[in-house]
Image 1 (cartoon, helix red, strand yellow):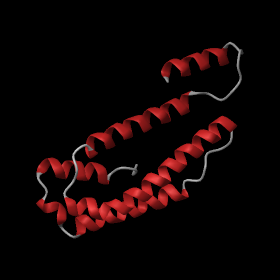
Image 2 (image 1 turned 180 degrees about the vertical axis):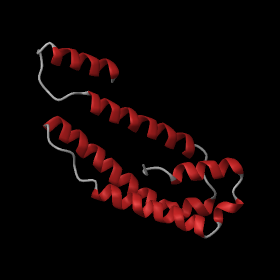
Image 3 (image 1 turned 135 degrees about the horizontal axis):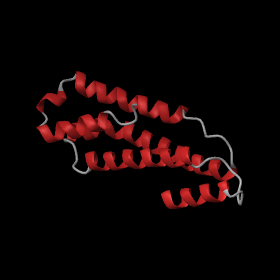
Image 4 (image 1 turned 90 degrees about the vertical axis):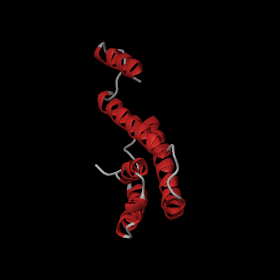
Length: 129
């Protein structure tokens, strides 16, 4: 992405191409990449059954909402339109955060071994900046 972005900026500065600055898009993609790496690291080892069962539905909703949003974002970029609405993503993340809070409130995190607790809290902070 950096090579393509640098090439696009070079073409823009030489007036060989027109278009918006690629810097903000490249920074956003880099942040998204880092978020996905952190999620992958946190999710590589499954959480205990009760956690998985309770998070299954919120994660499925978040998966669909995020996939739809990313596809719509790609289409918007190609069509040079503004970004799609984040309403469904925010709703899905709120549902997920609510279940994370409920797991904590129910005291289930107290019995987790240290490494599982680290992964749980890393997953619990996803999507919140």
